[in-house]
Image (cartoon, rainbow, N blue to C red; front, side, top):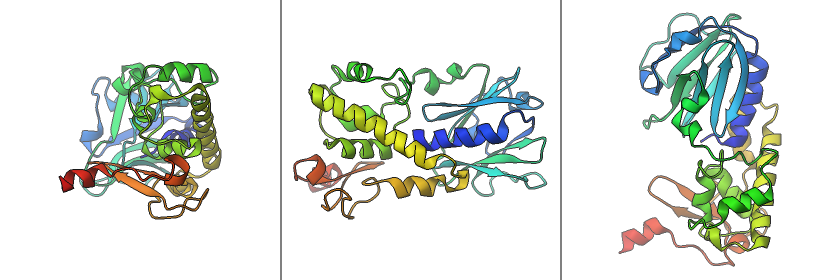
Length: 287
């Protein structure tokens, strides 16, 4: 799933390629991705792009004197830029294409979604806060006013484990499964540690790891073409998606805990005092 750094890189890319250009056509190929119907997709046509914004993991294309096109790429969605869009109408139900946006220049982009779990979401709204997921977003962890005191206040009294707290978009916007693993590895903390149990020193360490990990990922992604962002993300991850490989910090084997629809990766030496965490999926099977 694209997270804050990749969506920020897409925002940079689209700002350069879309701003000031007129949208001439918006073609829905998979109707299921469209989550709003008033205003219609056609309300975007004839308007120039005034700016592109990132709101957590949402992309927001703002048009001048027109609506916003807000997109959440979900787990398997992606944006593909094309300097010259194919001629002719795309055929519904043929391949992963979900939506096409064409510009006056002949360029544009496609939104695609792989797999069978269709969660890609597109909204056309007068105000991005009309999108439920945007309305409930917590603070952006890279915002100038997101300081250590604000972070500590968010975690105060938070009884969830750190892994779940970091992924909660209403608590902190933009962090998902991959970067929560990376942040916790950098902070040398167990994903199962309770957020409310952190000492002041641990809170400071987690805050620094959060800001540093995301900032470094954004810098790695900056200037990377949209089509190469997924590979760039994977190459920069130290533990997420690397179960069975050696930890780049200590050399211990990266372990995994599996859940029904996701998994987490961690280093026992760096994060849990050398003790492997119980794989809850296997524990249930053995009962």
